[in-house]
Length: 156
Image 1: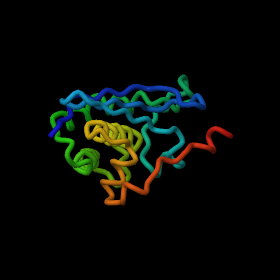
Image 2: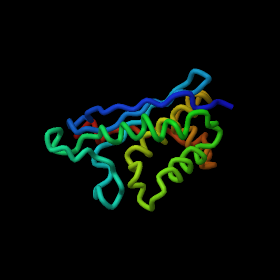
Image 3: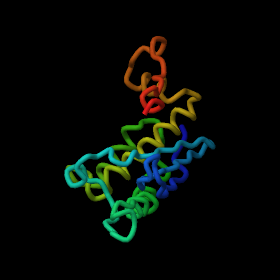
Image 4: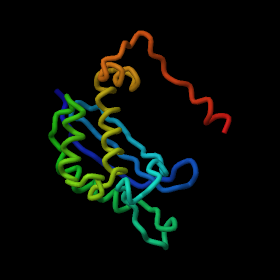
């Protein structure tokens, strides 16, 4: 069973030039996964516990350096050495560490980024495309599922 070896997050800009988080989660078996949180994923910052810098000198206060710090320090310390057998164990560990209803201590953007990176790392370590890994996890038939084609984004 692979274990989480390292987690590294940083601030990046999305396709619209908005700051967001990318997290890389490394497993002890050499596999890794990345998770990027789309900016604007959470329409109401306060309701959904998104962590932003609120520093008006950077990106109109929308920077995510605080969220990156949370991942690289608090979340990383809590998850290093955890088995990636069950994704829910990773998610519940972060939710418990946060301790709030709306995940406002660690931030949903931080938690989601790490969770997505872990999901991709597990899929990679099992040599499965992400959609097939998710289908298996949800006990859906994998022989009829195909990966969606991002037609809208191309036209947009």
